Image (cartoon, rainbow over all chains, first blue to last red; front, side, top):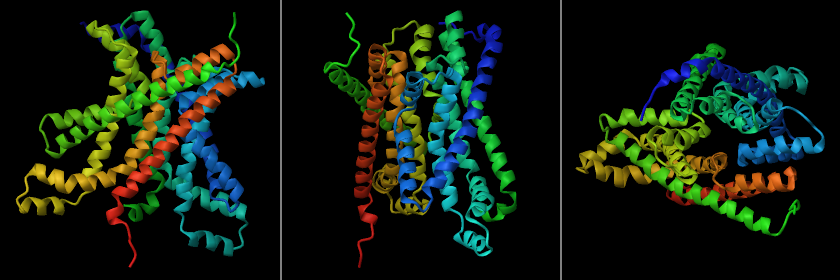
Length: 223
Length: 223
């Protein structure tokens, strides 16, 4: 039994590249899932029962089917219908759609939490429904859901490790390559574990800061 | 000879995979439930050195991808200690520890949800710490925890799909095999996803029923 972390030193640059790819994928997927989640949340809080039902089915399916199955569905399925995109794009699309299901729940909760008086006041002032939604409802809902959206992001960072199964060399994928070069799986994976934990911890710190900054004018009411 | 089309035997294959998935899911959930509760009890008794160690370990498990944990156990432990670990054993260890970490958090918050005054009152009546735990804390904490526990179990069922990556022939692995043989990704992954979906829904339904029963004592009966 030998435990020697120094064998990792020559590979740190390679691992950093992988971490960068993870960060890119997560950042793109976060944007994708917030947009997706916002639209689905609009549909789920709309007055049309058809829209509500469709959006509920979407959320229900993508929350109850394992992500790896969804990923394989897209990765192997899309070329079948003539859409050829690379592993990175497939991964980001799959992450966005799966993350969108979770984000939509968060944003929906944010919308439902808005005081009806605010919306009524806006309607009485003669604002159109579109303006009420984009200028009043959505900003408030997004601001209050920063913290839960942060936990969606953290989950996404952890889930993105699954992208290594579709040949994408993000953090976990590049660690696998390092293992096959050094034959030291324990050292590599324990470092990887700690790196992920630190990464998600930093993300959660950042989210807490952002949350406090965005809600600074209503801190007394929240706290 | 090429078997490129679906055969009736594939149904049996899928059911076998489902059996492996569910078997591992139930056994690891049970072990995780036991260990997680044990950890929470350790915290309740404020065991000196053990409590911070457990908290740190649980945080590490919660904040790192399950895939990396699986790799650490399956590739890392044999590399370090020169022991043999089968994929199934590695899956058992990882999934149990992972569920334990999440159960621990739920159990701790469930115990903390019970007012200090109740525990103090029980102590004043001369109950020992164990009696307080057994007759005052446990029944109420159980009713509090059942909702989050159901959500956790639904999530853990989806996490089991990751063990296919280290070679356990579970439902996802069977899907992979069928996909490679028939080259019909849409049908294969839809069926696999549907099976997971049905199991998740069933689990959620059972959890809701159980919750209703546990909370029946507090339900509003009418006048």
